[in-house]
Image (cartoon, rainbow, N blue to C red):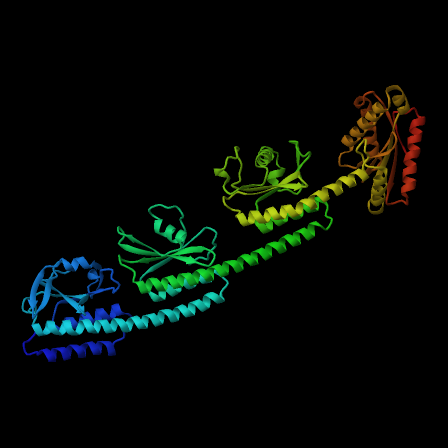
Length: 628
């Protein structure tokens, strides 16, 4: 029990000393921790069993926050709660209320609430509780000391801590702002935001709500930003769309959330979510600090993203420039396809790449160029290729499918991500390039734009390579028979004689060809030559080359063939011609052979074959004769 020997002045002096010692000799990290220690001192001073204080946040919200040793009392109460308390007694003109309804784990026999006022306005409510009546006999001088000293001391200490806290926060803000503006890495900026906030209030939880196009490092508390305007994401969506701080109370979870947009000069780049462990009202000074930090971080994020985008654009331009330079180096078509396939696989990580060339601009027929990946070279790809071509014609533009499972492709296929871009030059579509991957959303829109630009730059190179090879074929082949020209045969045989081991040469002459022309006309004669030429190509295949030697004379060169092996093939051809021509004709054939064990010139080689042909004619035609 508080003894009557304490006089008012003595009590006030003792209380001042206790509070002064509390301020001077104990280190407090925050105003809240100071209030908890103050409650302990007051409990000892008045010999109470429990002392807690509910302080106003000072911002006119009508909310009071508990500071107490009892963790169950750490909650928020509205002003109307205190207004509804029943009056317990009047001690020396000071109204004291019944605090038995205050939420504490332990039940007390005597529970009082004393308003603490400054200039007639309540700034806090002191909650004092006792187990026994003897201790609960509050003396007027004790109450007077509490009312006069505690309220003023709290006000001064709150001002002190507020100043200290503001200095620390803005010193921290200055440091982090310096770091923000010296960093061009998005992940570093995001990490600095979280680290700074954890230093200012470690009790809160912090999350970054970002869109899908951010590739963040592990360890950052990142969530996907949900744009849908529903009940679970309304506040975060509003913060992102409106660019203003939003608040949200999760009543069932007993948590309060603040959403601060990370706003730059050109847009909003994400939302910072702050989750308080209990229901509360965020103080204006904290909200303002968060706003400044979020805006500063937003500008830093914007600068970092713009820097990274500019670097990416530079890399993309360098990539296109290097690729175009390589393509313009007069590559053959096979080299062009191989190079482009490597670029698509290495740079864009594509799984399949197909190079499709139209045989005619509006025709259904197409060729898959060698060098395309395995899927497109397989027979099962035909339906897929035709469907993609049809979709390109319908859209009259490119095809970009992020998730093919959700798109109306209309057939079974293994790909979820698909890009198809026509190779168009001067309004004529020469073909298309298809880039595919089995994962959905694998190619970003930026990737698509780069692929589109790359194909646009490569179309001319493809056209030039195709035209070059067509021109080479035109020069190297006979227009009528599509066999190689005599000039090409000369060069080919000369090259083989310089580096090979052996080979055989056959000269073929269509018997009585003048009679065919005179009887059936020259068009029929041309058709007969074509029929014999096609049979030659069929019999020779890839074992050698065939050429038109001149007029109705044709030729075959078989590298690595012995004279006997070449003779067998020649005999097979002689026997097959009458059954493969209409009108029926026969052929005569002369054959010569060379090997690297003997000295021979190409002129001598050809002459020996020609002499053998002459003897075949003399022997009655429709036969094959080898050199002497």
